[in-house]
Length: 217
Figure 1 (cartoon, rainbow, N blue to C red):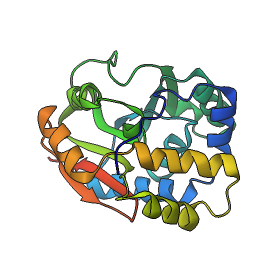
Figure 2: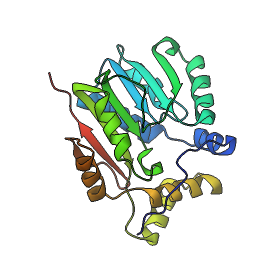
Figure 3: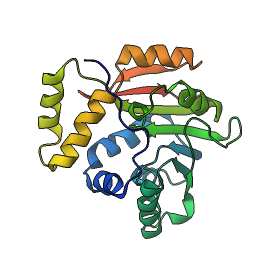
Figure 4: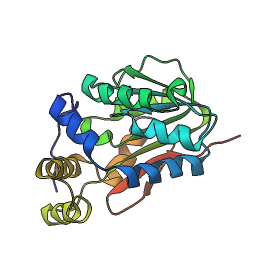
C-alpha cells in the first residue's frame, strides 16, 4: 500500500474532541507498561501528547516521574490541561505548545523521551527523531510507538473492523486514515539510521511497532 499523508496537526475542535472521546485505554496501558519495562524514570518528555492521557498513567505507575507533554495542537492541549487539572498528579505534569521537529529544550535534558502515534502525522519524521534523540540524556529511555502501514486496503479494512468496531463512523475514518499514513517497519529502521539513532524496531501488535532504547546505568 502506498503511504497517504494525513494533516500534520489535528487542531480543529472536532478532531480534538473526536480523538479525546475514543477509547485508548488498552494501547495506552500497554505503552506505559513498555516504558516501565525499559526502565523509564525521572524527568520525562511526551512528544505529541495529544489530550494528555499517557502522562496521567505514567504518574500513576511511577511515583517519581515528572512529565512535560508537548503538542502543536492548541485544541489537543485544551483537553490535556483539563485532564491535568482534574487529576491528583497536576503538580507533576505540565503541558507546552511546541513543534516536535524543533524542541526548545537543552541537549540531554530528559531521562526518558517518548511518543505515541504521532510519527504517521509527519511527512518526513527525521527532524523529529533527531530532536527526540538530542534531548535524551545518554543512557536514557527512548520509546516511539506508532501504527505500521498494512499491506493493502483489505488488511486496513480488517484492522478497522477488529479494533474500531464500537467507534462511530468519524472515529473509524480517523483510524483508517492513520493506518494508511503510517510507515512500514523497514522504513522506520531506515529513517532512524538516517537520523543518527541507535535503536531497535520492535513489532508490538498486529498494528503497532516501536522504536526503543533501554535504560543504561
